Length: 431
Image (cartoon, rainbow, N blue to C red; front, side, top):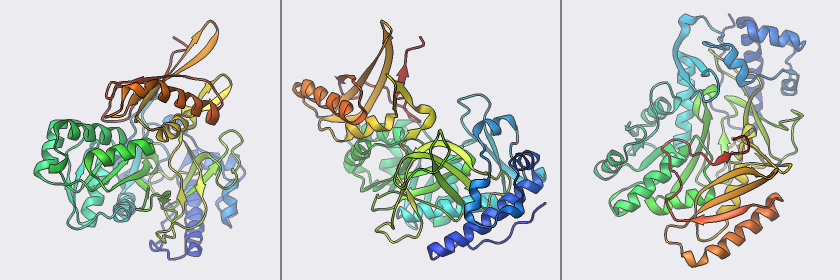
């Protein structure tokens, strides 16, 4: 078994980051090759051995891995340590086929806690804060990750879990947490409940840390307005990459800082798998640098984003990527045009008088595809403006996405809400 070398956790310059990335990349390839039959076969098939990794550019010589590879390796895929070194497992939600189960060594758990704590610190969370954790516990990574990170930074964790709006509101009033952690949908659902109950002036939420799904600019504004929060932070992560905590935006909200000393992030064309130009949207591909139990080599996440150039105004050396636009497998092909729900998000975020909630229905009539976008009116919106607002949204979709869509404004709070992830797209063409 390949022993892990100590890797410095406090890079101070971009040169430090590059040095740590090369050290971690070489270790990961050697570790996976020597300790996992799947990886050995995969690398041999690509004609690559660990000694071939001499610089960061050699990353492009490595083959890709996918979620299908994880499912085929069920129940303990990519396992690269003896089973007795595994101290924990976590699982994805398993919406397609078998669940993706990922193993963790003791060091993996410590590493995850360390960089998750960085997220909280970047969001200004620490000693004296009370953190209401309204995410799932158990097999899911979110609850355990937030809990450990809160404790590491010295904040008080309130592990309430998702749902149960009555208890959520009671704790918001009685325990006065200053931070709320949950999915974007849960944040909006709870913010609307706070507004409905008229308790916004009785709570103390200053920071909302949300993730698990895309949060549009309009949704962020709604959450802040209804809860009285100062900041809404976008935290990223996935089960395969430890869990949430892989990155977060700072108070400048100018992109998601990601922990480049724990993993390498590539942004590639999802069709050609070649790097896209700087600033162009592509698929996130990640390679871990320290993960012991289940390392990832060029793992295709299917998430779409773009790398952001330059350094953030906050001064952090950690690079940034944009918010997640969507997933390559969530793409809608409508009349020959590739559309992502995130594009609709951004169009709606620029329209006055509508809320952040919408859904898209696509059906086929007489052999032709039609798209209907239903959008909620703002909480205090004027119905007399609906017709003009619908026309504005139709124009925006036509100009930005180059397709025609029907648009319907509906009453506020009439579209389905969720405490987990909201479903936005309903494709009826195969019904």
